[in-house]
Image 1: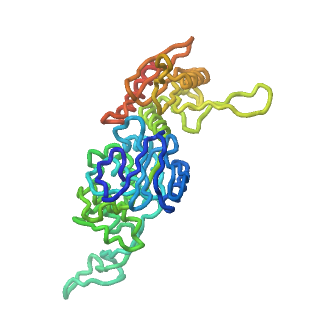
Image 2 (image 1 turned 60 degrees about the vertical axis):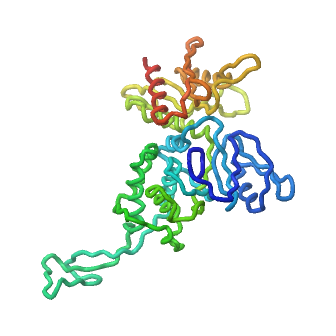
Image 3 (image 1 turned 90 degrees about the horizontal axis):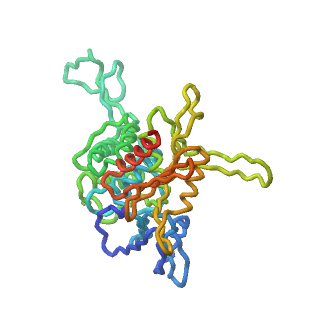
Length: 419
């Protein structure tokens, strides 16, 4: 998968159509099959015919990702705001959830190990564990009190005191290929670029607990030519690529991996929520994604509900009363955009976001926090209007350790609201 932080070499004669998130579309030549794939992804990509084999294509605002339209054409949408590692942000957003899978394909080519390659390994392993992990017959040798299967005799005078040696066929998940997959995940988790994905890999290894980790010296994906094991080919080849740092076992650009398109604002919001979930003390309660506060109807019609749902709300539960009761300590709203808007005469913070956090502060009777990604400068400022206090801060998405940066901002906000 060739993406923002993936330093893979491009296959020869490949046409890359690169767009920027929220960027303009352009007119390109596509055949009918390529146009059909684009139209199947109308939620993330625009494709309008403007003439014979000519189409105006571009990204739907907010989406980033990559997809291979054909053997010669790859489309990539890159983030508009500066992000050092998209895969690290992805791992924070899907900390305890599997990465959504897509039926369409992207391609990976020969190159160095990167965090995006690790994310593809995790996604493929999650898919196999959920649906397609395949058991097989293996030959098992042990001693039994009664004969079963093929008997094995130890010389002319066998000793039966420990039982009769037998060989039997057993239907099990502890097969050579599954052992390679588990051992490969163990080895990949030790790589420095795999740090953001270690919690997800640990959960995968727990799911594979009944499988023995045995890493063969070589494992050729060509052995997966059978249709029964075709679903293993992407994961086995990616693990080979990660372990051997070479693409000798497959043709450059020939490996199919999952194609993804994500809404970056949703990833950012989910990463912020997970950071607060990790640093929130046991004595506090964090709102669940489905929690919300509803306005009470006084009179009139039509009776349409009005709800208030910040991205994060932290509560101090009342002692001796269930956690749904208690005082709110902090409400947080994450916005994936530049916190500063360029005005006609001077720059200013975005009023619509400030109005929103002020409404949350009044409804929840708690201080508020607006979190943005850092764009041109750091922002760390607090305001007070009447009894309502709110802060505006940025998170540097270009730092080396994204998880620490998110958690640092979460700890600072919790420490400030409790002081």
